[in-house]
Length: 160
Image (cartoon, rainbow, N blue to C red):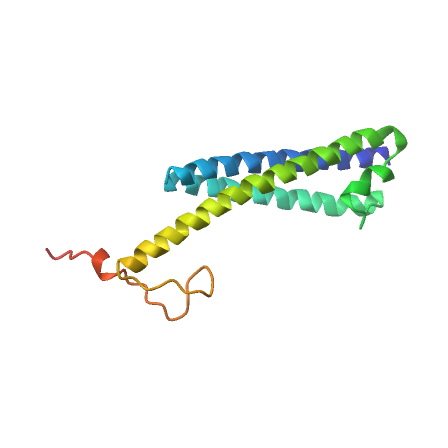
């Protein structure tokens, strides 16, 4: 049982490290968006996708460990109570660290998302002002029946 508990603590530490990495990526994304550096932003988005794949692997690890330890359906805050008494302090520390890093990540990600949404709104406004189609209110992505040609002021005559 202690071996499984140690494995779960390793999982929690890996999650904490992953959240720390995502927080750092979001801080870099925020800086890139503030500088309008699209190449850096694209690279950071690729790194973020790689980190998301790492989280998928961690999720599979969690799904295997929880039933073995008997923690399926147990809220994260109550997990340390199910550990052997000698490991409860270590488990509480790991859970608290994970929660703190999650809060920090959410705050950083929220700031970054807000700035990116503002920048996208500015781009949509400029395209509309240049004669392009107005942005649909349905949501992000390509809309049905929307012409994909650029506005007249953005077209180039290659025959010249």
